[in-house]
Amino acid sequence: MSTSLIQKYNVPGPRYTSYPTVPYWNEAAFTVEKYEDTLKKTFLESNSEEGISIYIHLPFCESLCTFCGCNKRITKRHEVESPYIAAVLEEWDMYVNLLEEKPVIKEIHLGGGTPTFFSPENLKILLDGLFEKAVRAEETDFSFEGHPNNTKQEHLQLLYDLGFKRVSYGVQDYNFEVQRAIHRFQPFVNVKNATEGAREIGYTSVGHDLIFGLPFQTVDHIRETIAKTKELMPDRIAFYSYAHVPWIKGNGQRGFKEEDLPSANVKREMYEVGKQLLAEAGYVEVGMDHFALKTDSLYKAMENNKLHRNFMGYTSSKTKVMIGLGVSAISDSWSGFAQNVKTIEEYYEILEKGELPLYRGHILTAEDEKLRQHILNLMCNLETSWKEDEMKFPELPEVLISLKEMEADGLLEFGDEKLIVKESGRPFVRNICMAFDLLLQRSKPETRLFSMTV
Image (cartoon, rainbow, N blue to C red; front, side, top):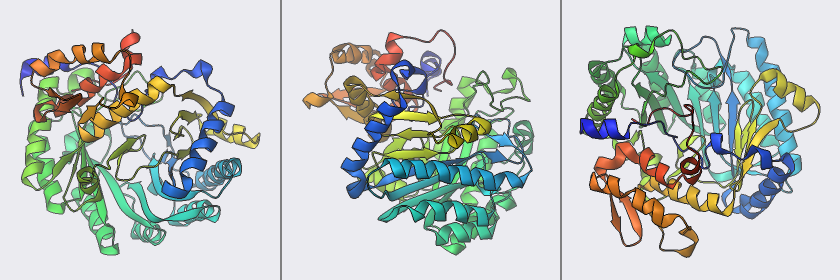
């Protein structure tokens, strides 16, 4: 890849797990009542046909990983588990009472934090509490994030018995110097045991998360990590760029200096080398930063034009309603977003008042909905079209003119009222989406809000 293109397009930009992106939510116009109205409307229109998704944020970790930008609470005190689960189920009860029919659960994702911080027994209490007041869809997609060091066979068996068929493990990198810098020590044997343990039980998809651009990481480290990964052949791989956002309050990105990070050119070489090695091993690139074997549901979703992207990342199933439970979790009613408070203490305090623990959100305008669909199309299908009137908007001509330079650089091409991202443009798909992000274009941030796109 051209060094000049990297220098040209390596700018701060969103990862587009939503549109509008969180910094551009109109919080002043948001109210919980407005959000509840959008949620009830979309739920009643879609529940019986497609069901709902549930994301549960389980924030506890026993140790701090210094590359992590997620909301977490570091503790070794496992007595925190029961009160937290009780609070999440109390929040779930509020949502069930708000809706006028039993939710049909199609998708569940347990994220964190470290979901396997919780004992199998407590995870069962949590999930039984969910299913008590809901219907299980005929076809489900239940998944969780596991830490290779503490995911026991009991975790895997219990969750499998409750319908979970997919697990992803955070691997990041196998080099000890890199692991020491990010404070994430896990030997290959632990990943091997966790991966093979899931397969023995019957999990149909085991994923590994790998990161490039970490402190002290080199291109050779990427080669070594992917060589070890090929020994286990996970069904899908998230191979993504480290998002360095140390200015965000409460994240763990410390213990190393800016100069310890690889340059943008080296990061892009890491990606190109990794992508080539994964392709040689039989993985196909899906959307942005994701790779899957042809037997995996993520690849099949892409082939069938059913790939979807939301706050949980890429998914092989789409629902218009996603309810987020737990601290900092984000809910999506398709025409509105709402985020929970970020501290456990405040979360408990608001629930005790009998209120949903929401503190900010956004109600989508008609323009927002059109732009979101264009960005979703680009992120999932690497193309978008404006042939239909409902996909046109007044600023479209200006947006298309702004993309002419990327066309000249060979990153995309225009067809009959459509745009297609070329293979050479894949690494710059976030930049292409930014042209459609009118809120970003109208109000460029004066301070850093996003990680670099390359």
